[in-house]
Length: 125
Image (cartoon, rainbow, N blue to C red; front, side, top):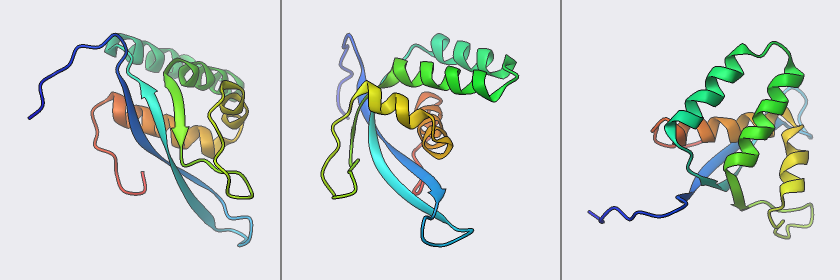
């Protein structure tokens, strides 16, 4: 077993699965995956976000809260490509745009919750 290393920022990679409508098959879903690098947040911050989120009443408020949470913890990604298959470098603006896609937001927020609350990553997320 490795020794615990105290660091100022605890960064780690976590798998993300995005389940989105299949563009070629009506009524079916397609799963795509990548890895996101997260910055660990204190448990109190995670719980405060969840408690705040539970009080929200509109989708607009929930999207804004998810965007805020992602900005706080998402630091990089790998395995994200464009239409030609080239790697897409992580950028905060690209993350902000992707938050508007419900399937992307759901996949990333599920991964954040799994990692934050100590659940093992599931195959297929």
